[in-house]
Amino acid sequence: MLAMLSWLGPACHEDPGEPNSFEPVGSAESTTAAEPIETDESGAEPSDGGVEPTGSPADCGNDAVVEFRIEPGTGSGAWNSRENILTVRVGQVLRIHNDDVVGHTLHTYGAPVEHGEWIEPGAHADHEVIEEYDPGSGPPWTYGHEAGESAAFWLRGVR
Image (cartoon, rainbow, N blue to C red; front, top):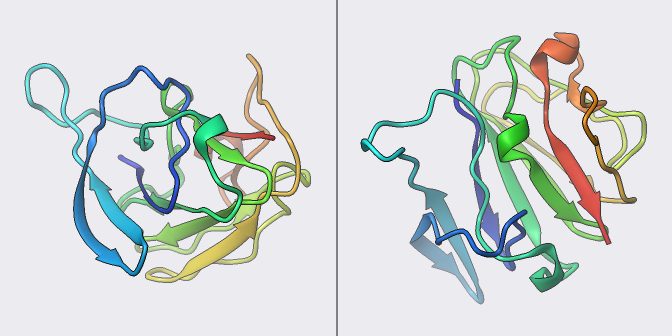
């Protein structure tokens, strides 16, 4: 299972030293849509986890829309991995696309976004990032509501 991430507008990433892992695939006015290219050293796709665009959270504008894709076949599995935590900035919009064949709901305890609504297969839902949140070293409190913590969604909110 592989969760993918693309973005519109400024990008947020945990490590600004990472090389750019995206190639532009189109543009809409002043924003650029991108799709990740994911391979390991051998050229194989990784076995799990999302990919984030490069750039530090400090480089992100609050008007950015960060797009996350729940990949086909995710089912009750993790949406991404701790190693590929998604960092979003307060004021941004997190857009979750459901590319899976089953519906999903984002579960949170109110941070960094409100608890989500049901997302039909092929649909998306927008979530405004409203406060800081760091899952630390414990289990994530953001996950797929229907499956529980086995459907971890590693998500961090920063200012």
